[in-house]
Image (cartoon, rainbow, N blue to C red; front, side, top):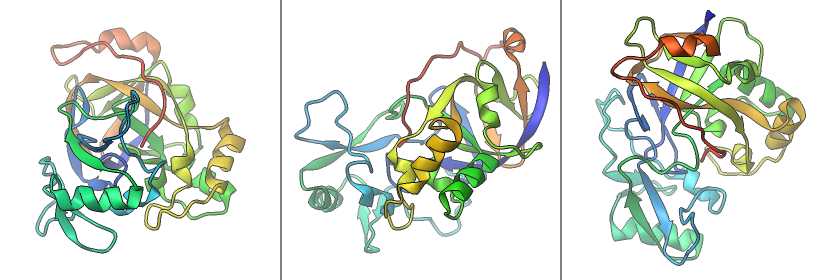
Length: 267
């Protein structure tokens, strides 16, 4: 069954893992998620684990570092940032020793910036959440609704304003726009949340009420993860169509590959 579920309300890209994101009007959806999303991350030099990346769960202040908005830019330019603005307002080169030293000082151990061609994801390369889900969680937590806490790539404005509809999309396919060339993702799993949602995006102040609300409202799930099955251009305002599991077999073309199964986490 094919159902229109809503429209693309917002698009976010996070060039540097765990740093502030960019709100976009349009972006290219490639096989490894949005072009330019989480292509950079700080590596902890003294860490020998299988996950050496420095995230806001270990250094909340990372959220307060951001790529500066370039004057005259429509924020659809997919080049990676050359500089980062620190919480103190200074702009430092992305790969410069000064930025690495500043982050390392705040963290308390040496770090270095790394770039990965296909992105540095904990699990899935694309995430989606409905604005109604964010509003309901925020209402239960007694906090203002701020979708940036959930660090999604795509925010959906639902036709039927009921929170946690995303749970029903698992096993289906979301296509963004109409036609055989519309970009699409296979909805692989629900997004299990972690303490990242507790951190205020502007101050990095923790508010545990947020994660408690997710647990209480929907067993700690909010939004979904997907695997890209057809590449193309995402844009704010696009119609979003849900293809049930039975429809998935009809979506193949030269831009289509099978989905993969991610695990959890979104930072």
